[in-house]
Image (cartoon, rainbow over all chains, first blue to last red):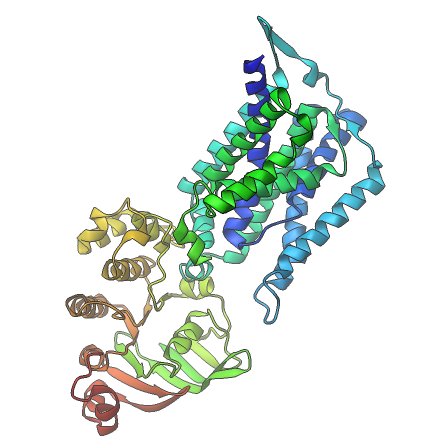
Length: 294
Length: 237
Protein backbone atom coordinates (compact mmCIF):
# COMPACT_ATOMS: atom_id res chain seq x y z
CA UNK A 1 0.00 0.00 0.00
CA UNK A 2 2.68 2.48 0.98
CA UNK A 3 4.81 1.50 -2.00
CA UNK A 4 1.85 1.99 -4.29
CA UNK A 5 1.28 5.46 -2.87
CA UNK A 6 4.94 6.31 -3.31
CA UNK A 7 4.70 5.26 -6.95
CA UNK A 8 1.57 7.38 -7.37
CA UNK A 9 3.34 10.28 -5.70
CA UNK A 10 6.39 9.99 -7.94
CA UNK A 11 4.17 9.88 -11.02
CA UNK A 12 2.32 13.00 -9.98
CA UNK A 13 5.54 14.66 -8.87
CA UNK A 14 7.23 13.95 -12.22
CA UNK A 15 4.38 15.68 -14.01
CA UNK A 16 4.56 18.65 -11.66
CA UNK A 17 8.28 18.80 -12.21
CA UNK A 18 7.87 18.93 -16.00
CA UNK A 19 5.36 21.74 -15.70
CA UNK A 20 7.62 23.63 -13.33
CA UNK A 21 10.52 23.22 -15.78
CA UNK A 22 8.55 25.27 -18.30
CA UNK A 23 7.95 28.00 -15.74
CA UNK A 24 11.51 28.06 -14.57
CA UNK A 25 13.01 28.27 -18.08
CA UNK A 26 10.92 31.28 -18.98
CA UNK A 27 11.49 32.94 -15.64
CA UNK A 28 15.22 32.34 -15.86
CA UNK A 29 15.59 34.01 -19.24
CA UNK A 30 12.86 36.63 -19.26
CA UNK A 31 12.43 37.26 -15.54
CA UNK A 32 8.66 36.96 -15.83
CA UNK A 33 6.08 34.47 -14.66
CA UNK A 34 4.29 33.04 -17.67
CA UNK A 35 0.74 32.74 -16.37
CA UNK A 36 -0.37 31.21 -19.68
CA UNK A 37 1.87 28.19 -19.17
CA UNK A 38 -0.86 26.20 -17.41
CA UNK A 39 -3.26 26.83 -20.29
CA UNK A 40 -0.66 25.83 -22.88
CA UNK A 41 -0.33 22.62 -20.89
CA UNK A 42 -4.13 22.23 -21.06
CA UNK A 43 -4.06 22.72 -24.83
CA UNK A 44 -1.43 19.99 -25.04
CA UNK A 45 -3.79 17.66 -23.16
CA UNK A 46 -6.69 18.50 -25.50
CA UNK A 47 -4.56 17.92 -28.56
CA UNK A 48 -3.83 14.51 -27.08
CA UNK A 49 -7.53 13.77 -26.51
CA UNK A 50 -8.44 14.91 -30.00
CA UNK A 51 -5.65 13.01 -31.69
CA UNK A 52 -6.15 9.70 -29.91
CA UNK A 53 -9.91 9.82 -29.26
CA UNK A 54 -11.48 11.59 -32.23
CA UNK A 55 -8.89 11.07 -34.93
CA UNK A 56 -7.78 7.66 -33.69
CA UNK A 57 -4.09 8.42 -34.07
CA UNK A 58 -1.49 6.33 -32.29
CA UNK A 59 -0.08 7.69 -29.08
CA UNK A 60 3.33 8.66 -30.46
CA UNK A 61 1.71 10.74 -33.16
CA UNK A 62 -0.45 12.42 -30.53
CA UNK A 63 2.72 13.37 -28.68
CA UNK A 64 4.22 14.90 -31.78
CA UNK A 65 0.97 16.76 -32.51
CA UNK A 66 0.88 18.15 -28.97
CA UNK A 67 4.52 19.25 -29.17
CA UNK A 68 3.96 20.95 -32.52
CA UNK A 69 0.78 22.76 -31.45
CA UNK A 70 2.16 23.97 -28.12
CA UNK A 71 5.44 25.07 -29.75
CA UNK A 72 3.47 27.20 -32.19
CA UNK A 73 1.43 28.59 -29.29
CA UNK A 74 4.66 29.41 -27.49
CA UNK A 75 5.96 31.26 -30.52
CA UNK A 76 2.74 33.24 -30.89
CA UNK A 77 2.76 34.02 -27.16
CA UNK A 78 6.25 35.46 -27.40
CA UNK A 79 5.69 37.23 -30.70
CA UNK A 80 2.41 38.93 -29.93
CA UNK A 81 2.11 39.29 -26.16
CA UNK A 82 5.65 39.52 -24.80
CA UNK A 83 7.85 41.04 -27.51
CA UNK A 84 5.74 44.17 -28.12
CA UNK A 85 6.16 45.03 -24.43
CA UNK A 86 9.89 44.41 -24.22
CA UNK A 87 12.29 47.31 -24.03
CA UNK A 88 9.57 49.92 -24.42
CA UNK A 89 9.85 53.03 -22.35
CA UNK A 90 7.07 53.52 -19.83
CA UNK A 91 5.83 49.92 -19.85
CA UNK A 92 5.35 48.62 -16.31
CA UNK A 93 7.39 45.55 -15.44
CA UNK A 94 4.08 43.91 -14.54
CA UNK A 95 2.75 44.36 -18.07
CA UNK A 96 4.08 41.03 -19.46
CA UNK A 97 2.58 39.20 -16.48
CA UNK A 98 -0.85 40.76 -17.11
CA UNK A 99 -0.43 40.04 -20.78
CA UNK A 100 0.13 36.32 -20.13
CA UNK A 101 -2.90 36.25 -17.81
CA UNK A 102 -4.89 37.59 -20.75
CA UNK A 103 -3.62 34.77 -22.95
CA UNK A 104 -4.50 32.21 -20.28
CA UNK A 105 -8.09 33.48 -20.12
CA UNK A 106 -8.31 33.45 -23.90
CA UNK A 107 -7.05 29.88 -24.19
CA UNK A 108 -9.29 28.58 -21.40
CA UNK A 109 -12.40 30.11 -22.92
CA UNK A 110 -11.44 29.00 -26.38
CA UNK A 111 -11.25 25.40 -25.30
CA UNK A 112 -14.53 25.82 -23.38
CA UNK A 113 -16.04 26.92 -26.62
CA UNK A 114 -14.59 24.14 -28.72
CA UNK A 115 -14.70 21.18 -26.35
CA UNK A 116 -17.41 22.12 -23.83
CA UNK A 117 -17.08 22.60 -20.11
CA UNK A 118 -17.03 19.06 -18.76
CA UNK A 119 -14.25 16.54 -18.30
CA UNK A 120 -13.19 14.65 -21.37
CA UNK A 121 -11.94 11.10 -21.00
CA UNK A 122 -8.55 10.34 -22.43
CA UNK A 123 -9.28 7.03 -24.13
CA UNK A 124 -6.29 4.97 -24.93
CA UNK A 125 -6.13 1.27 -24.33
CA UNK A 126 -2.56 2.00 -23.31
CA UNK A 127 -3.62 3.54 -20.02
CA UNK A 128 -5.36 0.32 -18.95
CA UNK A 129 -2.28 -1.89 -19.05
CA UNK A 130 -1.06 -2.71 -15.58
CA UNK A 131 1.43 -4.97 -13.92
CA UNK A 132 0.66 -6.67 -10.63
CA UNK A 133 3.52 -7.65 -8.40
CA UNK A 134 2.23 -9.26 -5.21
CA UNK A 135 -0.35 -6.88 -3.85
CA UNK A 136 0.97 -3.88 -5.76
CA UNK A 137 -0.51 -2.71 -9.03
CA UNK A 138 1.56 -0.48 -11.26
CA UNK A 139 0.15 0.98 -14.42
CA UNK A 140 2.40 1.01 -17.43
CA UNK A 141 1.41 4.64 -17.91
CA UNK A 142 3.00 5.49 -14.58
CA UNK A 143 6.28 3.94 -15.64
CA UNK A 144 6.14 5.74 -18.99
CA UNK A 145 5.46 9.09 -17.30
CA UNK A 146 8.33 8.57 -14.94
CA UNK A 147 10.71 7.59 -17.72
CA UNK A 148 9.65 10.48 -19.97
CA UNK A 149 10.06 13.01 -17.21
CA UNK A 150 13.48 11.66 -16.23
CA UNK A 151 14.54 11.72 -19.89
CA UNK A 152 13.27 15.28 -20.24
CA UNK A 153 15.17 16.42 -17.18
CA UNK A 154 18.40 14.71 -18.20
CA UNK A 155 17.99 15.94 -21.76
CA UNK A 156 17.33 19.49 -20.65
CA UNK A 157 20.27 19.48 -18.24
CA UNK A 158 22.65 18.18 -20.91
CA UNK A 159 21.25 20.63 -23.44
CA UNK A 160 21.75 23.56 -21.07
CA UNK A 161 25.24 22.57 -19.95
CA UNK A 162 26.82 21.11 -23.08
CA UNK A 163 25.36 22.60 -26.25
CA UNK A 164 26.05 26.01 -27.72
CA UNK A 165 22.36 26.96 -27.76
CA UNK A 166 21.97 25.83 -24.16
CA UNK A 167 24.95 27.86 -23.04
CA UNK A 168 23.66 30.87 -24.94
CA UNK A 169 20.34 30.43 -23.15
CA UNK A 170 22.07 30.37 -19.76
CA UNK A 171 24.18 33.39 -20.70
CA UNK A 172 21.00 35.24 -21.68
CA UNK A 173 19.39 34.22 -18.39
CA UNK A 174 22.47 35.39 -16.49
CA UNK A 175 22.67 38.79 -18.17
CA UNK A 176 20.87 39.69 -21.36
CA UNK A 177 23.09 42.66 -22.18
CA UNK A 178 26.31 40.72 -21.67
CA UNK A 179 25.02 37.83 -23.77
CA UNK A 180 24.23 40.24 -26.59
CA UNK A 181 27.70 41.81 -26.63
CA UNK A 182 29.18 38.30 -26.74
CA UNK A 183 27.35 37.84 -29.99
CA UNK A 184 24.22 36.01 -28.86
CA UNK A 185 21.12 36.93 -30.82
CA UNK A 186 19.07 37.30 -27.65
CA UNK A 187 15.83 37.75 -29.54
CA UNK A 188 16.22 34.29 -31.01
CA UNK A 189 17.18 32.80 -27.66
CA UNK A 190 14.09 34.28 -26.05
CA UNK A 191 11.87 32.77 -28.76
CA UNK A 192 13.65 29.45 -28.37
CA UNK A 193 13.13 29.52 -24.60
CA UNK A 194 9.41 30.20 -24.77
CA UNK A 195 8.94 27.60 -27.52
CA UNK A 196 10.88 24.89 -25.65
CA UNK A 197 9.07 25.69 -22.40
CA UNK A 198 5.70 25.49 -24.16
CA UNK A 199 6.55 22.20 -25.87
CA UNK A 200 7.53 20.75 -22.50
CA UNK A 201 4.18 21.99 -21.16
CA UNK A 202 2.41 20.24 -24.05
CA UNK A 203 4.16 16.96 -23.24
CA UNK A 204 3.07 17.34 -19.61
CA UNK A 205 -0.50 17.87 -20.83
CA UNK A 206 -0.63 14.53 -22.63
CA UNK A 207 1.01 12.77 -19.70
CA UNK A 208 -1.59 14.14 -17.30
CA UNK A 209 -4.38 13.14 -19.65
CA UNK A 210 -3.05 9.59 -19.69
CA UNK A 211 -2.41 9.42 -15.97
CA UNK A 212 -5.78 10.74 -14.78
CA UNK A 213 -7.81 9.76 -17.80
CA UNK A 214 -9.52 13.12 -17.75
CA UNK A 215 -9.01 16.49 -19.40
CA UNK A 216 -10.90 19.76 -18.86
CA UNK A 217 -10.51 23.42 -19.84
CA UNK A 218 -10.02 24.35 -16.17
CA UNK A 219 -7.10 22.01 -15.56
CA UNK A 220 -4.59 24.65 -16.61
CA UNK A 221 -5.25 27.04 -13.77
CA UNK A 222 -4.62 24.73 -10.83
CA UNK A 223 -1.66 23.11 -12.58
CA UNK A 224 -0.25 26.52 -13.36
CA UNK A 225 -0.54 27.68 -9.77
CA UNK A 226 1.12 24.50 -8.55
CA UNK A 227 3.92 24.94 -11.04
CA UNK A 228 4.38 28.42 -9.60
CA UNK A 229 4.44 27.01 -6.06
CA UNK A 230 7.12 24.54 -7.13
CA UNK A 231 9.49 27.10 -8.58
CA UNK A 232 9.11 29.24 -5.46
CA UNK A 233 9.91 26.12 -3.44
CA UNK A 234 12.83 25.03 -5.60
CA UNK A 235 14.26 28.46 -6.37
CA UNK A 236 13.15 30.69 -9.22
CA UNK A 237 14.85 29.96 -12.52
CA UNK A 238 16.58 26.86 -11.15
CA UNK A 239 16.21 23.63 -13.14
CA UNK A 240 17.27 21.32 -10.34
CA UNK A 241 14.90 23.13 -7.98
CA UNK A 242 11.99 22.55 -10.35
CA UNK A 243 12.63 18.81 -10.41
CA UNK A 244 13.06 18.35 -6.69
CA UNK A 245 10.22 20.74 -5.88
CA UNK A 246 7.88 18.85 -8.21
CA UNK A 247 8.66 15.53 -6.60
CA UNK A 248 8.23 16.94 -3.09
CA UNK A 249 4.84 18.40 -3.95
CA UNK A 250 3.64 15.27 -5.76
CA UNK A 251 4.66 12.96 -2.95
CA UNK A 252 3.25 15.10 -0.17
CA UNK A 253 -0.08 15.54 -1.96
CA UNK A 254 -0.40 11.82 -2.55
CA UNK A 255 0.50 10.99 1.02
CA UNK A 256 -2.01 13.48 2.35
CA UNK A 257 -4.77 11.98 0.24
CA UNK A 258 -3.85 8.44 1.27
CA UNK A 259 -3.31 8.96 4.97
CA UNK A 260 -4.91 12.27 5.77
CA UNK A 261 -7.75 14.38 4.53
CA UNK A 262 -8.08 14.54 0.76
CA UNK A 263 -9.95 17.84 1.07
CA UNK A 264 -6.67 19.57 1.85
CA UNK A 265 -4.88 18.20 -1.19
CA UNK A 266 -4.71 21.44 -3.11
CA UNK A 267 -3.85 23.40 0.02
CA UNK A 268 -0.46 21.72 0.34
CA UNK A 269 1.10 23.66 -2.50
CA UNK A 270 0.07 26.96 -0.99
CA UNK A 271 1.02 26.04 2.56
CA UNK A 272 4.42 25.19 1.11
CA UNK A 273 4.68 28.63 -0.51
CA UNK A 274 3.92 30.32 2.80
CA UNK A 275 6.41 28.23 4.75
CA UNK A 276 9.19 28.57 2.19
CA UNK A 277 8.72 32.32 1.83
CA UNK A 278 8.96 32.68 5.61
CA UNK A 279 11.95 30.40 6.13
CA UNK A 280 13.97 30.47 2.91
CA UNK A 281 12.65 33.07 0.48
CA UNK A 282 15.22 32.21 -2.20
CA UNK A 283 13.93 28.61 -2.37
CA UNK A 284 15.74 25.36 -1.70
CA UNK A 285 18.29 25.71 -4.49
CA UNK A 286 18.07 29.43 -5.09
CA UNK A 287 21.01 31.60 -4.20
CA UNK A 288 20.87 34.96 -2.50
CA UNK A 289 23.22 36.38 -5.12
CA UNK A 290 20.88 35.65 -7.98
CA UNK A 291 18.04 37.21 -6.04
CA UNK A 292 19.94 40.44 -5.66
CA UNK A 293 20.72 40.54 -9.33
CA UNK A 294 17.09 40.31 -10.37
CA UNK B 1 38.55 52.40 -39.25
CA UNK B 2 35.77 53.68 -37.02
CA UNK B 3 34.16 57.04 -37.62
CA UNK B 4 31.39 58.69 -35.65
CA UNK B 5 29.75 61.68 -37.26
CA UNK B 6 27.50 63.98 -35.23
CA UNK B 7 26.19 61.10 -33.08
CA UNK B 8 23.37 61.97 -30.70
CA UNK B 9 22.05 59.47 -28.18
CA UNK B 10 19.13 59.92 -25.80
CA UNK B 11 18.01 58.23 -22.60
CA UNK B 12 14.29 58.87 -22.92
CA UNK B 13 14.07 62.67 -23.01
CA UNK B 14 17.57 63.26 -21.75
CA UNK B 15 20.20 63.88 -24.37
CA UNK B 16 23.38 62.12 -23.30
CA UNK B 17 25.43 62.67 -26.46
CA UNK B 18 25.18 66.06 -28.16
CA UNK B 19 26.80 65.40 -31.49
CA UNK B 20 29.97 63.37 -31.16
CA UNK B 21 32.59 63.33 -33.93
CA UNK B 22 35.27 60.78 -33.31
CA UNK B 23 37.69 58.76 -35.36
CA UNK B 24 39.67 55.64 -34.57
CA UNK B 25 42.55 54.62 -36.81
CA UNK B 26 43.60 51.05 -37.26
CA UNK B 27 46.39 49.71 -35.07
CA UNK B 28 46.20 52.54 -32.56
CA UNK B 29 45.09 53.02 -28.98
CA UNK B 30 42.59 55.85 -28.77
CA UNK B 31 41.51 57.03 -25.37
CA UNK B 32 38.36 58.82 -24.33
CA UNK B 33 38.70 60.89 -21.17
CA UNK B 34 36.34 62.93 -19.10
CA UNK B 35 34.60 63.25 -15.76
CA UNK B 36 31.76 61.04 -14.55
CA UNK B 37 28.62 61.63 -16.54
CA UNK B 38 30.42 63.18 -19.49
CA UNK B 39 29.00 60.53 -21.80
CA UNK B 40 32.01 58.24 -22.24
CA UNK B 41 30.18 55.02 -21.46
CA UNK B 42 27.20 56.17 -23.51
CA UNK B 43 29.54 56.65 -26.47
CA UNK B 44 30.91 53.13 -26.00
CA UNK B 45 27.44 51.60 -25.68
CA UNK B 46 26.31 53.44 -28.77
CA UNK B 47 29.25 52.12 -30.79
CA UNK B 48 28.65 48.58 -29.52
CA UNK B 49 24.95 48.74 -30.42
CA UNK B 50 23.53 48.58 -26.90
CA UNK B 51 22.11 52.06 -27.43
CA UNK B 52 20.74 53.33 -30.72
CA UNK B 53 21.72 56.84 -31.76
CA UNK B 54 18.87 59.17 -32.63
CA UNK B 55 20.93 61.17 -35.10
CA UNK B 56 24.27 60.88 -36.78
CA UNK B 57 26.09 58.00 -38.34
CA UNK B 58 28.67 55.42 -37.36
CA UNK B 59 30.99 53.93 -39.96
CA UNK B 60 33.23 50.92 -39.50
CA UNK B 61 35.74 49.79 -42.13
CA UNK B 62 33.98 52.02 -44.63
CA UNK B 63 30.57 50.53 -43.94
CA UNK B 64 27.61 52.25 -42.31
CA UNK B 65 26.86 50.32 -39.11
CA UNK B 66 24.45 52.77 -37.48
CA UNK B 67 21.67 51.00 -35.58
CA UNK B 68 22.97 47.44 -35.88
CA UNK B 69 22.45 45.02 -32.97
CA UNK B 70 25.39 44.07 -30.68
CA UNK B 71 25.57 40.54 -32.10
CA UNK B 72 25.73 41.90 -35.65
CA UNK B 73 28.46 44.37 -34.66
CA UNK B 74 30.49 41.61 -33.04
CA UNK B 75 30.33 39.72 -36.33
CA UNK B 76 31.82 42.81 -37.99
CA UNK B 77 34.65 42.79 -35.44
CA UNK B 78 33.65 45.20 -32.67
CA UNK B 79 33.83 43.79 -29.16
CA UNK B 80 32.89 45.69 -26.00
CA UNK B 81 34.20 45.04 -22.50
CA UNK B 82 31.59 47.00 -20.58
CA UNK B 83 32.05 49.00 -17.43
CA UNK B 84 31.77 46.83 -14.35
CA UNK B 85 33.13 43.84 -16.28
CA UNK B 86 29.78 42.14 -16.87
CA UNK B 87 30.99 38.59 -16.53
CA UNK B 88 28.43 35.77 -16.55
CA UNK B 89 28.59 35.09 -12.82
CA UNK B 90 26.47 31.92 -12.78
CA UNK B 91 28.62 30.25 -15.44
CA UNK B 92 32.10 28.82 -14.96
CA UNK B 93 35.26 30.65 -16.00
CA UNK B 94 35.73 28.20 -18.87
CA UNK B 95 32.13 28.66 -20.02
CA UNK B 96 32.65 32.42 -19.97
CA UNK B 97 35.65 31.99 -22.26
CA UNK B 98 33.69 29.66 -24.53
CA UNK B 99 30.94 32.25 -24.76
CA UNK B 100 33.62 34.71 -25.90
CA UNK B 101 34.08 32.59 -29.01
CA UNK B 102 30.32 32.08 -29.43
CA UNK B 103 30.15 33.31 -33.01
CA UNK B 104 33.29 31.55 -34.20
CA UNK B 105 32.92 28.38 -36.18
CA UNK B 106 36.60 27.62 -36.84
CA UNK B 107 38.45 24.73 -35.26
CA UNK B 108 41.04 26.81 -33.40
CA UNK B 109 38.71 27.92 -30.61
CA UNK B 110 40.01 25.27 -28.21
CA UNK B 111 43.61 26.19 -28.92
CA UNK B 112 42.88 29.88 -28.52
CA UNK B 113 41.25 29.24 -25.16
CA UNK B 114 44.38 27.30 -24.15
CA UNK B 115 46.54 30.23 -25.28
CA UNK B 116 44.45 32.71 -23.33
CA UNK B 117 44.75 30.53 -20.26
CA UNK B 118 48.51 30.45 -20.70
CA UNK B 119 48.53 34.25 -20.78
CA UNK B 120 46.24 34.39 -17.72
CA UNK B 121 47.26 31.41 -15.58
CA UNK B 122 44.77 32.35 -12.87
CA UNK B 123 41.92 31.67 -15.31
CA UNK B 124 43.28 28.19 -16.01
CA UNK B 125 43.57 27.53 -12.30
CA UNK B 126 39.99 28.66 -11.70
CA UNK B 127 38.43 27.37 -14.92
CA UNK B 128 35.79 25.20 -13.25
CA UNK B 129 34.81 27.84 -10.69
CA UNK B 130 31.79 30.06 -11.07
CA UNK B 131 33.00 33.34 -12.56
CA UNK B 132 31.14 35.23 -9.84
CA UNK B 133 33.57 33.92 -7.24
CA UNK B 134 36.58 35.62 -8.87
CA UNK B 135 38.08 38.79 -7.42
CA UNK B 136 37.57 42.11 -9.18
CA UNK B 137 40.93 42.02 -10.95
CA UNK B 138 40.45 38.43 -12.05
CA UNK B 139 37.00 39.26 -13.38
CA UNK B 140 38.47 42.09 -15.42
CA UNK B 141 41.10 39.74 -16.85
CA UNK B 142 38.34 37.28 -17.68
CA UNK B 143 36.24 39.97 -19.35
CA UNK B 144 39.16 41.13 -21.51
CA UNK B 145 40.28 37.58 -22.33
CA UNK B 146 36.71 36.69 -23.26
CA UNK B 147 36.38 39.69 -25.56
CA UNK B 148 39.67 38.80 -27.30
CA UNK B 149 38.43 35.28 -28.03
CA UNK B 150 35.97 36.71 -30.53
CA UNK B 151 39.07 37.88 -32.47
CA UNK B 152 37.85 41.46 -32.76
CA UNK B 153 39.36 44.07 -35.04
CA UNK B 154 38.41 46.76 -32.56
CA UNK B 155 38.08 46.26 -28.83
CA UNK B 156 36.19 48.79 -26.71
CA UNK B 157 37.41 48.87 -23.11
CA UNK B 158 35.18 50.81 -20.73
CA UNK B 159 37.07 51.76 -17.57
CA UNK B 160 39.03 48.53 -17.23
CA UNK B 161 40.97 49.82 -14.22
CA UNK B 162 37.92 50.88 -12.23
CA UNK B 163 38.01 49.80 -8.59
CA UNK B 164 41.21 47.79 -8.90
CA UNK B 165 44.36 47.91 -6.78
CA UNK B 166 47.30 49.90 -8.28
CA UNK B 167 49.38 46.77 -8.91
CA UNK B 168 46.55 45.17 -10.90
CA UNK B 169 45.89 48.43 -12.73
CA UNK B 170 49.50 48.39 -13.95
CA UNK B 171 48.93 44.83 -15.12
CA UNK B 172 45.79 45.83 -17.02
CA UNK B 173 47.60 48.66 -18.82
CA UNK B 174 50.35 46.23 -19.77
CA UNK B 175 47.73 43.92 -21.24
CA UNK B 176 46.19 46.78 -23.23
CA UNK B 177 49.59 47.51 -24.78
CA UNK B 178 49.95 43.84 -25.65
CA UNK B 179 46.55 43.86 -27.31
CA UNK B 180 47.68 46.71 -29.56
CA UNK B 181 50.96 44.99 -30.35
CA UNK B 182 49.02 41.88 -31.35
CA UNK B 183 47.26 44.00 -33.97
CA UNK B 184 43.92 44.80 -32.38
CA UNK B 185 42.82 48.41 -32.32
CA UNK B 186 41.78 49.72 -28.90
CA UNK B 187 39.29 52.38 -27.87
CA UNK B 188 39.84 52.97 -24.18
CA UNK B 189 37.65 54.88 -21.76
CA UNK B 190 39.49 55.83 -18.58
CA UNK B 191 39.22 57.90 -15.45
CA UNK B 192 42.90 57.30 -15.00
CA UNK B 193 43.89 59.96 -17.53
CA UNK B 194 47.63 59.97 -16.99
CA UNK B 195 48.14 56.25 -17.44
CA UNK B 196 45.71 56.15 -20.35
CA UNK B 197 47.52 58.94 -22.20
CA UNK B 198 50.86 57.26 -21.60
CA UNK B 199 49.89 54.23 -23.64
CA UNK B 200 47.51 55.93 -26.07
CA UNK B 201 48.30 57.39 -29.49
CA UNK B 202 45.46 59.85 -29.65
CA UNK B 203 42.90 61.14 -27.16
CA UNK B 204 39.55 62.83 -26.88
CA UNK B 205 38.24 64.68 -23.85
CA UNK B 206 34.50 64.75 -23.25
CA UNK B 207 32.38 67.06 -21.17
CA UNK B 208 28.57 66.95 -20.81
CA UNK B 209 27.96 64.98 -23.96
CA UNK B 210 30.40 66.82 -26.21
CA UNK B 211 34.00 66.44 -27.23
CA UNK B 212 35.82 69.54 -26.06
CA UNK B 213 39.46 68.72 -26.71
CA UNK B 214 41.23 66.28 -29.01
CA UNK B 215 44.79 65.69 -30.00
CA UNK B 216 47.73 63.33 -29.93
CA UNK B 217 48.35 61.76 -26.55
CA UNK B 218 51.61 63.67 -26.13
CA UNK B 219 49.99 67.01 -26.85
CA UNK B 220 47.15 66.25 -24.42
CA UNK B 221 49.65 65.43 -21.67
CA UNK B 222 51.01 68.97 -22.16
CA UNK B 223 47.67 70.72 -22.70
CA UNK B 224 47.10 73.05 -19.73
CA UNK B 225 43.33 72.43 -19.74
CA UNK B 226 43.84 68.68 -19.54
CA UNK B 227 46.60 68.97 -16.97
CA UNK B 228 44.48 71.13 -14.74
CA UNK B 229 41.25 69.17 -15.00
CA UNK B 230 42.43 65.57 -15.25
CA UNK B 231 46.11 65.24 -14.48
CA UNK B 232 46.71 67.70 -11.68
CA UNK B 233 49.28 66.81 -9.10
CA UNK B 234 47.68 63.59 -7.87
CA UNK B 235 45.64 62.28 -10.70
CA UNK B 236 45.62 58.61 -9.93
CA UNK B 237 42.08 58.59 -8.52
